[in-house]
Image 1: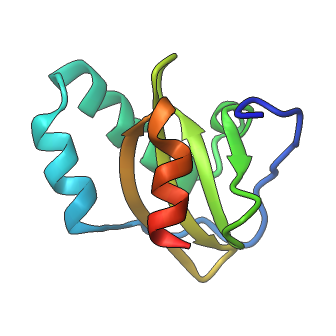
Image 2: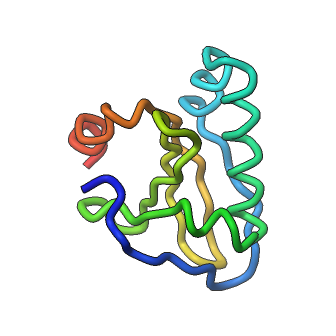
Length: 105
């Protein structure tokens, strides 16, 4: 269910991302290469770079929330209102996705 074939496409204008304290804290504890991938993914998502959208899926139980594949084992969670808001929420291990959704739903 984590990799369903749902297509997300950019809409609205590119939006400057806001980074939550949870995202900042997680990036400090991740290996540097993984933190760098998350930071790059946030910028690419914000700038509507086409390639990142193939790695992006909606979180069905949380409207306006999306998960972006950072690596095989990690996902970045974002809250996105096209053209209005882009909040980078967290980077989590893929296996923690369900518990993350329950805690934030």
